[in-house]
Length: 114
Length: 115
Image 1 (tube, rainbow over the protein chains, first blue to last red):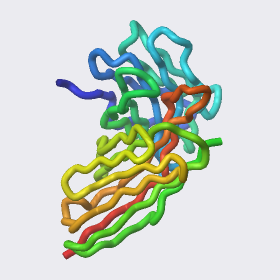
Image 2 (cartoon, chains in turn orange, cyan):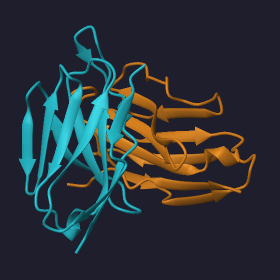
Image 3 (tube, chains in turn purple, red):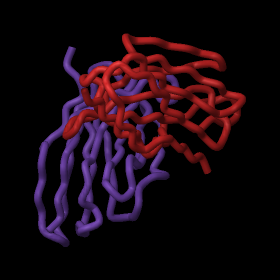
Image 4 (cartoon, rainbow over the protein chains, first blue to last red):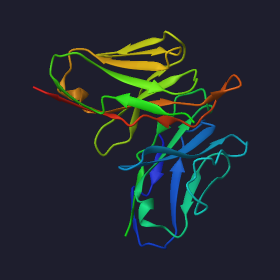
């Protein structure tokens, strides 16, 4: 079946602009996660959603970052007033149930802030 | 705070040789994941280890977990060029009998297999 999909695959933006990154999880997966990968910081957890529960936002680096998940499926990660340090690859993953099942990762969105 | 450390961070191997990558984590967890990442690609799941003493094998890779020592190993047998990639271990936090979803990743081990 189809895997996790993300769009866009690449995004170049200017400092101070807002960006939206989209994630489509695997059908039937109730848990959805956002991570980011950068040379300096490695792989970092950002946020995850499990069903209708309140999301775990403990990894969001600042209040410029937010995410929502509509209808228990598609998720959008929004970064407001982007900074150069936001440049990274943003990875989305999904699993059947949070904390138990293997997380399957999408191809990522490479964000470059000029 | 959960911390996950891998070593070595860089591994250059000759084809046909054996080697082990180590993954240590700092607080109790009931499971551990290994992922592979090829350059410019996303993460591919290799193994999930669910209990103390768990051992999983796939081809030339074998992973094990010792939850008491908070240590996992990824053993490579008779390496081939196709195994060249970055390997990550990842651990979820565990509290009150529940494993939570957010993974803490090790730094990654960059493996290069050459003739």
